[in-house]
Amino acid sequence: MPNMRLTKLPAREQAPDVRNKNFNEVSQGYDEAMAVDEAKRCLNCKHKPCVSGCPVNVRIPEFIGLVAEEKFMEAYEVIRSTNALPAVCGRVCPQETQCEEKCVRGIKGEPVAIGRLERFVADYAMAHGAQPAKPLPDNGKKVAIVGSGPAGLTCAGDLRKLGYEVTIFEALHTPGGVLVYGIPEFRLPKQLVRDEIKTLEDIGVKIETNMVIGRSITLDELLNEEGFSAVFVGSGAGLPRFQGIPGENLNGVYSANEFLTRINLMKAYTFPKTDTPVQVGKNAAVVGGGNVAMDAARSAKRLGAEHVYIVYRRGEQEMPARVEEVHHAKEEGIIFKMLTNPTEILGDENGHVRAMTCVEMELGEPDASGRRRPVVKAGSEHTIDVDTVVIAIGNSPNPLIKNTTPGLNTEKWGGIIVDEATGKTSRAHVYAGGDTVTGAATVILAMGAGKTAAAAIHEELSKQ
Picture 1: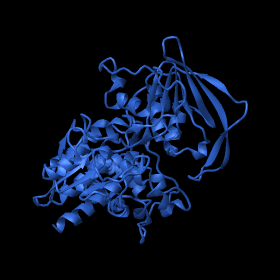
Picture 2: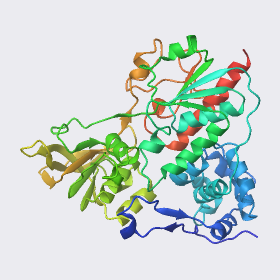
Picture 3: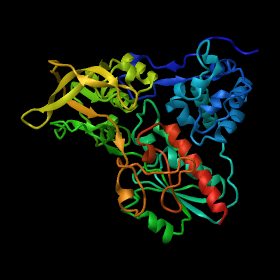
Picture 4: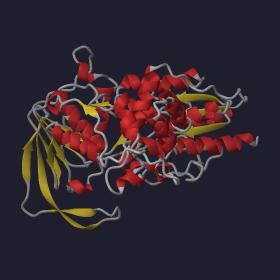
């Protein structure tokens, strides 16, 4: 008999006034009893609409049914059959707009907490020594993966299981891509990412760090000189955008990429134990309204800023950030300045940020994205005292691969053009997916692109 409770079982969390002073994980997830209780809310629908909402097609009712029966390890095997990073996805995927949005229980109440259950299963299995499935015997063919973010890791895992010799080339000194440099410890513990990556290494995926493709070696050299039969480019979108307003070159102004990389990958939050300080001062402003902006603002609060502002030119309804992230930010004391846009960053005599001039905005007609276009409200100019400004308005792909790969077609903004059904690029044997194709998006969409490309690469190489 299904549990017909209308609401999700809340996950355990640190109290807001405690967690905004530390970098420990905010959500503590479910324990076994809570997971079983929530799993019993699933109706195991015949048509399984939730699966169609998952970019990697996790067999959701099947794994949840096993949780309800307390068969947690079996549930993990079901998830891992299509999802290479379940512990990650259970934490950072926007389930509310994907699998949970299609859950039938959401019609007359809240959907089943699919993400929380996925996280529970992954954590349980990893804590109880789950072993990765053995790959098929080696088939003698090599595939190169550029980038060790979610797209690259997924593509690598799927191809290795099929018997390919897979090597990931990562530009930074630590694999994981945006999972290690972009998402804060309090949302995604880095040890967990390392554990997920180790499961891929355990089945034979090779990872070479400090390899900048386009500098250390080119795509053509990988294909023509190093013996790789195909290449998948999952190098992400790591080139930050700025607003182009006066004062963005002042000390104390960061791109969100630099700010979060210093904190996450270089462990600035442990200073002075590490030698990477990030001094946010008393007042910090983060420009933008996405998940990255929420991450930067919540990190600044934890680094000691008394007042942290989210400055966003549209209203809260237009913010692209997850509802959960906005909710957590508000609980932690982040101040939201909606319908506000900076026009200049002001410096002191030493060239350091001291204030930011802003204007108020009003929403006009919808633009191409469907969101109402913000226009300046006359006579609304004002100044905010700030010591640090973080620009979090988006990223573009680094042009290095494009500039060193003749014949690789790209969009004007830098994204690699692919066949959406296969991930194929304009270059033979070169595939791409994730943020390097779409621009900054979600972890799970990048993973879905990695799976699509892996299937297409396998189809191509199987014919050779």
